[in-house]
Amino acid sequence: MALDHSRSTEVFGHARTVIPGGVNSPVRAFSNVGIDPVFYDRAQGAQVWDIDGNAYLDFICSWGPMIFGHGDPEILDAVRCQLDRGVSFGAPCEAEVRLADLICSVAPGVEEVRMVSSGTEATMTAIRLARGCTGRDKIIKFQGNYHGHSDSLLVSAGSGVATLGIPDTPGVTAATASDTMVATYNNLDSVRSLFEAAPDQVACVIVEPVSGNMGVVAPQEGFLRGLRDLCDQFGALLIMDEVITGFRVALGGAQQLFGVSADLCTYGKIIGGGFPVGCVAGRERFMSNLAPAGSVYQAGTLSGNPVAMEAGLAQIRKLAREADRLYPQLQRKSDVLFGGLRDAASQAGVQVQVNALGSVGTVFFTPDPVVDWQTAARSDRDAFAVYFRAMLDQGLLIAPSQFEAVFLSDAHTDQHLQAFLAAARTAFAQVAN
Ligand code: PLP
Image (cartoon, rainbow, N blue to C red; front, side):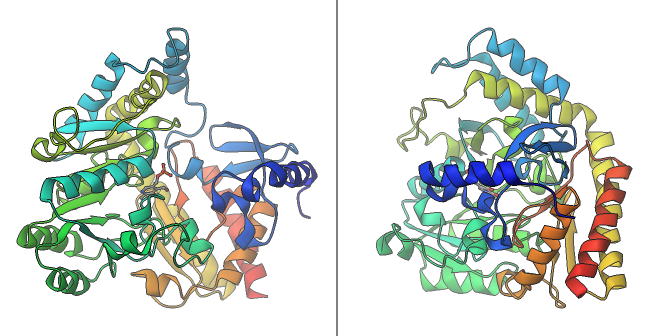
């Protein structure tokens, strides 16, 4: 029997009169899964409760930040302690230096860090910096990769843009879009062709080193190394957008996992411990071009906010301290969950591809391997919507889109994983009917 969402539906009805579409980020509206969104009330560990009092197991984890689950005591203590000392200074504080130190010490190739307040700001700044450093205008991105909602990065984007099927966003000028060249993920030839079409004009290649925003798609053997080589050959910067992968696929992110260093990289999500934080980071020779050290301008009233810095610091310290236990455990959970999902789908006679890497994964409703946007887009979104609604009815929260990831956290127990698999068996049976 479906859960009672009457209060959520009522609040959503009102929300639509004061907030465009009723939500402050489009995918939250649940529009492509055919129901009204659930409004959250509170969260603890691996659970969230909605305003109707329904409890859910949370496999969204705030879209990645909550790697220790909700309400981690160390993070909350750090936040509480800072609240008493001031919530915003608009001035330097020690915590931002400590957090920058910590990021430099664990992320390969990172020598300097500039804090901002979101992943979008981080990638936007990285692009501007790459342009400023090279004196070139064009950038290369990948179809189905999402780097936030700044104009030049919304072209052929994943995540909500793909979910809502918005090909080109009104408001992004043709001139801006024309400086964004779009390549095919996992296809080095497509990148080489773009470089050859605009020699000496490409400032950077920006890539999700593991795609999370067309659903999870891992880089094929040699892909990231090949990008590194092409960037070196054509004098462009390589930007790895580690907003999802940073501190998640390994302590040192995808750059550590795959042994390929970027010139600039971006973090978000996990580094804020649940608060709005992002950063652009990288080699000193590039980073030192940012104002006031250099002339590429970037700023922010709330950048390096002390509460957010303390939260991030507590989370990254705990990750660093527990890395030897945590990352192998997340991998084991991933094997249980995503392996179990493959078996469950096959037993129900539903053809899926389950892509997973470490603690992120996606069930694609398609018989063919998913390696890029073209293959991801072949997924049966109606089947996904049936699966999503069946999971929600059973108290399992997953992202309301085919083109997002399931996130695992330290708070998920074996029991939670088994509950997910039991619910998925019912959901797959409904898809099969
Ligand atoms: N880059 C990647 C890889 C992301 O997944 C996201 C958001 O999901 C962003 C950038 C943008 O981050 P934010 O939503 O904090 O602006």
